[in-house]
Structure formats: C-alpha cells, structure tokens
Length: 68
Image (cartoon, rainbow, N blue to C red):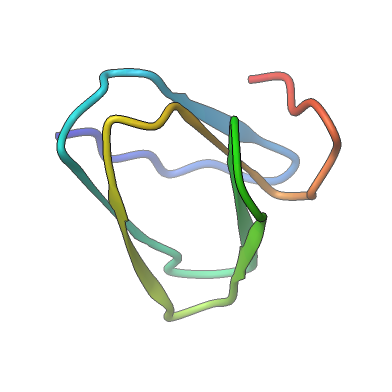
C-alpha cells in the first residue's frame, strides 16, 4: 500500500504490476495516464480502481510523458 500526501505539481508512477490499484483524490485533481489506453481525469473526492497489470502514471497534469 502506498499513501502519498504531496503538493502540486507532482507525479506518481505505478509499476508494481498489481492486479488492482485503488486511487483516491482527496484534494485537487489528478490524471490517470496508462502506458496504453485513454487518459482519465480524477477530480477531488473521486475514486478509481484500475485493473492491472498495466503500468500507469498519475500526474497533476495530463502531460504526454509525465516525469515522476
């Protein structure tokens, strides 16, 4: 389990290839940017469950190649 409390701008790279990943945005916005597939915006209070083992970046902005 990873719990991160950060101020923008930030990015997290998820590469553990887990079967499921749960993401909750407590404040602000974030983007789910999988290596393949569409990007998804998460707003404050929203929860996402990603099915693995896709590698994913979760940045504050939907940059083409987020840099953690």
